[in-house]
Structures are given as C-alpha cells and as structure tokens.
Image (cartoon, rainbow, N blue to C red; front, side, top):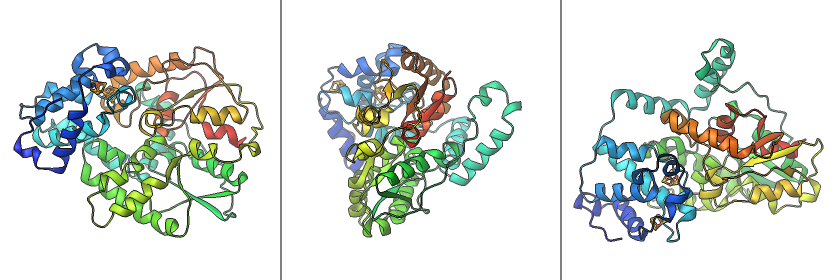
Length: 402
Ligand code: SF4
Ligand code: SF4
C-alpha cells in the first residue's frame, strides 16, 4: 500500500520501519479470518487490516482519538494475523511501534496510567511479585471470588539436579514463573539432566522485558534486555550451547533482542548472538535422543494448548506435540488451535471482558475430547487457563519428569 508519513515520523528509525511494514500490506483482508477480536466483535477496526489502517492514518498525520486507541488496545498482539498473512506483514512490530508513538501523543486517564505503572513495576520485579502472590495465596480463602480465581494455589518445585555434565544450556528464571509455577524450570533441568545436559540459570537475569516493551515503556524494556545479556554473557563465552526457553512469551521476546538492539553500539552484536542461541524447550528436545525419555506415570489423555507466542511468534507449531507423542503421551483432539486463550501478557488485566470471552472459547475448544489434563508452554497461559479449567493445568515438561 502507498504511504506518505508526516515529517515527524518519516525521519526516524521507528517511522521508517513502520512505513516498510505498512507498504508490505496489500489490504487483502485474509488476516481478519483468524483474528480473535474480529471474530468476537465483527468490526473491521477490531481486526488486523483495520488496525493497520488506523496506524497508517496516525503516521500520516490524522488526529488520534480515544476511540482509535481503544481498537488498538483491544488487540492481543497474538500475531495470529502474521501466520495467516500471505505478504509477510510484521504486524507485531507495527503495533508495538504504533502504540509507543501514540502513547506519547495521547495521554492516558489517571486510572489507566496508574494501572499501567503498577503492572510495569510489579510484574517484572521477581521479589515483589513473589511477595504479593504469597500474600494472595495466604488470604485466598477470604478473597472475593473475582480475585480469588486469579490467585493460583501455591506450587512447590522439586529439587534441581546437580550440575554434572559438560553440555551446558542457559535457562531464564524470568519474573512471574519462579513464584507462580516454580516447578517448570526445575522439571526442565531434571529432564535435560537425564539426557546428559546441565541447565543453569543466571541469577542476575530477570524479566525478559516483554511486560514493559509491550506496554509501550520501550526504554525500560530495553534496559532489562541489556541487563539479561550482561547476565548471560559469561556463560555464553564459556560455551553454553543454547538459551533454552520454558516460557514461550519470554522466548519470543528474547529472539527479538537482536532486532530491537540492532542500533545499540555496545549491545548490538551480543544481542544478535543471544537471539541466535535462543530456542524453545520443545524444539531443543526434539533434536536430542528422546528414546531416553519415557514417562513413568500415565498422565491420561492430554490436551495441549500451543501459546500464540510459540506458534505465531517463534513459529514452532506442532513441535511440542511431536515431543509429547514421542514420549508416549496420548494427545486429545482440540479445535481452533490458532486462537488466543485471552491471557496475552497483561491483556487479562487490561481487557478483562474480552479476555474472559476468549478464555471460555478456548476451554471449550480444548475439552471437546474430554482430556484428563491440559498442558501448555507459557506461564501466562497456564495461570489464565487454570482460573476456569475443570481439569489440572500444567507445563508440558512436567509430564516428562515423572
Ligand atoms: S496484513 Fe497481510 S493478510 Fe492482512 S490485509 Fe495486509 S497483506 Fe492482507
Ligand atoms: S495480533 Fe491478534 S488480536 Fe491483534 S490484530 Fe493480529 S490477530 Fe488480531
């Protein structure tokens, strides 16, 4: 499509990147068919093609209104539209850039500002989030229902194996996962140990930067990315063969470090290397000798929910399914696999109504074959599904750790 950006954006790196993405869009509308919010609302402005047009208008000088922003806010950044698009339009990058620029032009209401401020300060802070979650778990029985269902029951991690192998991979502890689902990385470490691989976490690494970056706090997000690179670099120089991601939301973000820090004179090369080393746990395991991994306890019939970040951003659709089948897990039939569960980072807090609609749809689609449990590959999806699921919800790696 033709574009004519106003001077204010035309001469900036972000403006130029946005323009090249806009020009790739031929306005065919194929993407609307797989957009969860368009399917729910049937409004062109709540689908990718309409949102692309709204961002184009803004970059070409049109006045931005609260109504326009509402349509952009309702986007889950699930990137299902990217998977469908025949022209390779990088919608996820466009919406990150567009939202960031609009944020500077149109101030939020005090209530919205406070909510966004709290989310960007609490969630990425591992200790603070852990403390608040623990308090929520202690007082869970007396919390009002809407809040109670959001607080997951306390989970324990089984012990990590001792570091004993010459093959080393790095893992990211992250921000929410250590307190919300602490057994995920521990289970991954034990499974990898059986395969002769030691998994280590770098203590100084923290949030991958996704919470801040996707809430338009780009500078804070980039600072967290640089801090993680510094934390991982000694192990990378010492020969760590991969950064194995157990949360696909973080994996998708870390795979973007190279692009997001490409103009940073100090970090560009390191960020590129970090992105190249980043791999999802499923894809990493698929390349190992899985004959050594037989599940001990039969988990029954299992429905796998592939997070959007795994299928649409990391492009690993079907990989975890293969690993689970090879390990002898019976997978349940599911439908609408491409659709988001409504978790989408902070979306479930910012857009609770749409989030709940999508959650109800997703749970229906995941349980058509009466599974005994649901497994997934991202802490956010796991916590969100768990709030309403009638069967246990786990990370899939825990099935291979039995
Ligand atoms: S984003 Fe892709 S699928 Fe959607 S309208 Fe543009 S070219 Fe077509
Ligand atoms: S990212 Fe997801 S919600 Fe947003 S426009 Fe694309 S398909 Fe729709």
